[in-house]
Every structure is written in C-alpha cells, then in structure tokens.
Amino acid sequence: MAAPGENLKINGSRLWDSIMEMAKIGPGIAGGNNRQTLTDDDAAGRALFQSWCEAAGMTMGVDQIGNMFAYREGTDPDALPVYAGSHLDTQPTGGKYDGVLGVLGALEAVRSMNDLGIKTKHPIVVVNWTNEEGTRFAPAMLASGVFAGKHELDWAFDRVDAEGKKFGDELERIGWKGEEEVGARKIHALFELHIEQGPILEAEGIDIGVVTHGQGLRWIECTVTGKESHTGSTPMPMRLNAGRGLARITELVHEIAMKHQPNSVGAIGHIDVYPNSRNIIPGKVVFTVDFRSHVQDIIDAMLEEFYARAPGLCEEIGVSLETEIVGSFDPPAFDENCVSAVRAAAERLGYSHIDIVSGAGHDACWINDVAPTSMVMCPCVDGLSHNEAEDISPEWAEAGANVLFHAVLETAEIVE
Ligand code: HGY
Ligand code: MN
Ligand code: MN
Image 1 (cartoon, rainbow, N blue to C red):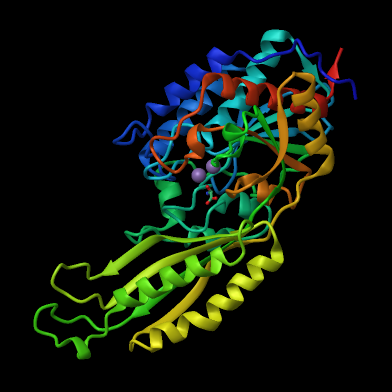
Image 2 (cartoon, protein in one colour):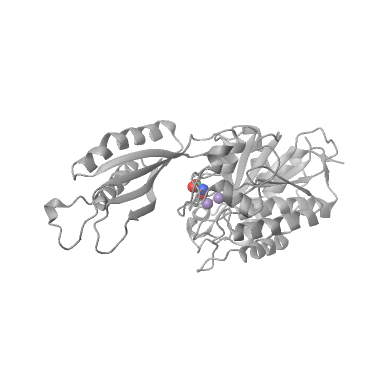
C-alpha cells in the first residue's frame, strides 16, 4: 500500500474549533464537561456531531444501543470500511478532550479528505460509541462491549443508574435507539485517537504514543452491611459500622496494588453510604474496587489476595461483605499491522514517538477482539484526566489527528 505523502495534513484550527464547540454542550462547573451518557446533553452532542458528519457528506447509521456510524463512500463498496472514532460521553467532572478528541479527530480526517479531494478504496466510518465511561451505567465501554459480543444487549438495557433509571429506557427517551443490529457491521481496521490520560508523553517531551497494549481491568462492586444506629447514644462496643469496612478495604486495595509496582493500580472511586445521615452510623456502604494491570498474572494475583483477605477484615468488626464483578476485561495486545501503521505515520510526519501501554480502558480494547485495532495517543497536561482541569495544546491535538489521518489513509488505500 502506497504511504500518504507527508504533505497531507489535517486542518488543526478547524479541529480545535469543533472541540471547543462540542465543549459548550453539557458544561461542567469548573471549565470541563458533564455530558454523561443518555442525558439530554448527550443527545444534544450527538445531534451536533450528526450535523457535522452530514455536512461532510457522510450518511449516519445508528445501532440498537445508540452507537453512531458516519459512512464515507470508498471506490470499492465491497471493501470493508476502515473505522476511526471514540466516545462523546464524559465523566461528571470530565474534561473537554477525553473521547471527544478521538471522535472529532476522525471527523477532521474525513473533512480533510474532502478538502484534498482524496478517494480511498475502503469506505471510512467515523464512530461515536455509546457509554464508554461507565460512570452513570456500569460497566465502562458498555456499547462497544455489546458490539464485540462481550455483553448481551438485553443485559445492557437492564443496567440501572443511581436513580434506578434503566439504560434501555433512557436510550429510548433521548431518541437514540437505532435499528441496526449491534455488532453486525464488519470492520477492516479500527483506529482510536485519545489523550494519554497519564504523564509519560508530556514528561518525556514526546509528541505521539504508539499504543501497543492496554491494561486489563476488574471492577468489584462491594456491599458492606452493618447496622444503622444513633451516633450519639450507641455504645462503641455495640456498633456495627459499615463505614469501617469501607476504610479497611480502601487500605487493603492500596496495599495490594502497591505490592506489584510499577505494573498495577488499585483504588475505590465510587462510594454510596446509606443512609448518609450525619447522626446515623452507616448501616450499608456500596463501593467499587478498580484493579488494573497490563500483566494478566498480576490481575489474577491482586484478585486472589483481595478475596482471601477482604471478608476477614469485615468479619473482625462484625459487618458482612458481598461482592460482584461489574466490569472485566483482560489486557489487550493491539494488532501489529495497525500499530505499525501508526508508528510509520508518526515517523513520516516527523513527530517524536514512543511505544506505550494505555493506562485507561477504551472502546478500542473491546473492538480489538473482533477487528484489527490500534490507538494513537497525544500528551495531556500533567497527565491529568477525569478532572475538569484536563488540558491539551492545539499542537498536540493536531499532531495526534495527523497521525490518525495517515494511519487511516494508509490502511484505506488512497486511489490515485
Ligand atoms: O475507566 C476507564 O479507563 C475509561 O476512562 N472509561
Ligand atoms: Mn476516554
Ligand atoms: Mn474517560
């Protein structure tokens, strides 16, 4: 396949303007975004994205779980499309770039193909995956997981948020439940551009991360049950404080993850305390343990130790522990040809680049199980993400989108 000329570039200021425009939808309270999945803000962001895709001459397809697929013709309609995209949903205190850079970077690649009069043999599809974040409806990467055959569609529809609203009902309510069968589409290759969400690229002054692997993940939902009682009148020896169970398990998770440095992480981010009253001893605490590593044996060792020790820590203080796995995928190794296309693009365009393991989970991690897939990463300021202060430079965005553009063009095969 002929490689694209290094003179072929995207329009960085148009990309930046589109990111800033999208950021106006579902604004946060501190400069970032709160555009959570299946909210009215998500619906508004989807509508804006669709209008841009149609203005770029693409036709939109939507599947039964709301995944959006904007299609650009290729010269060979029988050739499987090359896909590029990410997610438009954000964390409740999310940044403007997590996911959005990947969706709009892919749209910018198509806009630039139009400007440059480029035809490709393979069609191009720009993707917005539903509910990548998994913060309102667990697990993360839910819709790409259904697409890849990891979850049943009905199971996904039955997921509920903190208010007891069902995923399927909310998808219907915002009007983004499509007709297409989920997972019926066949993919020639998929590329996802994403901010690193870690400190390595910026700290080492590197423009591009060539993502070879991702971390595997286990989300363990824990329910610690004690007994609600008066914080003033209940004698200390009689207390069955579920909050102490949370405290002990929080420390246990940290201790286990620290044992496998530098290849492991562990924390508890989601915590619901019941009844959450200032003068009632917590009777129940529900929380999610997040263990990750790119080494399968380490994931297994962390879980083994957790299940061996956590119940005893609760029994010692008279409270009970129930656990349920609510998110799980093993460490992905991305497709070598797709990884090479990303590395060659960075090289051709004169960007500094290193091979890197993704610390965060991404839709590409699931799609990698059903099609050749890889990722392009750009730096982010202080490695900060899942925080409204998440920040990148226009130059980083442009470099990442140029590499994505070239990887897609090389794989989709330019037709002279
Ligand atoms: O949890 C993750 O790694 C992703 O950001 N949803
Ligand atoms: Mn993301
Ligand atoms: Mn995220």
